[in-house]
Length: 167
Image 1 (cartoon, rainbow, N blue to C red):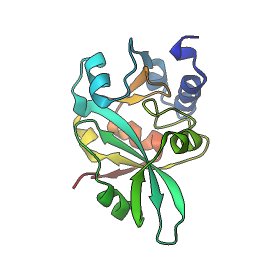
Image 2 (image 1 turned 90 degrees about the vertical axis):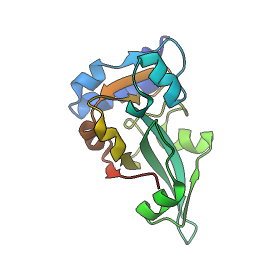
Image 3 (image 1 turned 180 degrees about the vertical axis):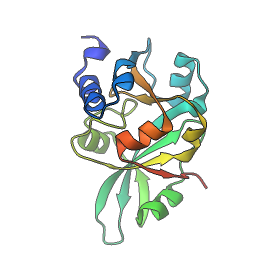
């Protein structure tokens, strides 16, 4: 089975079509190698690393110990600051999620987490730095699959909140 036929990629494609993002769905591209990092995706696509919407899944924890997933779509050019993220979402702290937590909440593997196609809606922050690029690239449910979009469409598709995610 080719990566474009992978169930996670098909779920992302369906979610894009359902959201009216036909160009994004039709633009899903299969890379020759896994692109588990923003740098690898940028190299494979021939674009600036800053134009990669790096999908980062975190475990947000409230003061009373309640936990929830947080998806941050960050420019590949920098790192999201967990203290800033915690303040933005009202959490006591925000920690990187382990692969099992990521898979449970997104249905997708680390390195291929898309902004859409999850089992249920995930609170999402979208790095405002991405707005400086006419085209940004996001993962499409598999480490070899990506799709083109815009900052505005990424915010709309993900139901995300535009935010400055670095300090």
